[in-house]
Image 1 (cartoon, rainbow, N blue to C red):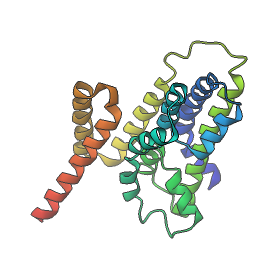
Image 2 (image 1 turned 135 degrees about the vertical axis):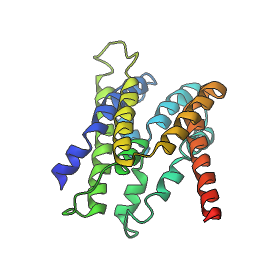
Image 3 (image 1 turned 135 degrees about the horizontal axis):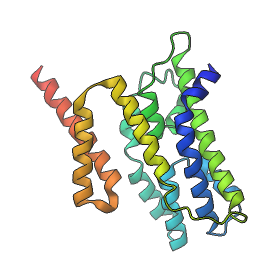
Length: 223
């Protein structure tokens, strides 16, 4: 099971490690000890929020401002969890960790894969989630340790995340084969790009979620 979960999680590795390295490099510019970047990868484990925290910390913002901004940025994860209320199994430490480890990438992957019948689904999900965080922590640590010895232009390294989501999008299409979710996501992205360019991703996600909920309610009422 472990080997299969590791193989399944490899697409996340190719996105998380480069981005984690970029975070570690940028975080070290704040002057903190290198292991702070590792601790953020372990305790915070939120890519966008961690990059956002760099700007907030450099601007000298307080804990309350950072906490509120992080909450609103990651509020979309509340909707992610609804899809796995039953799939994560009973309430125990494993389930709490699966909830903690739910990122955009793991959500996309877990909703795409088909767990082999010989494996216990909850354990398979656990290993994938664990491997995903290990990739991120590894990247953060490498970046932090390399900050003093590496000097290179990191422009464009964030495209690793875009490439990762393209791969996951293709996997989703192969599995789902329904045009409506992809159409809603595309339209929401266009609206967010035109009217909310500075917060495009967050707005696009919220529009998509709201549209799906509304359509679902309409469908239930018509049944």
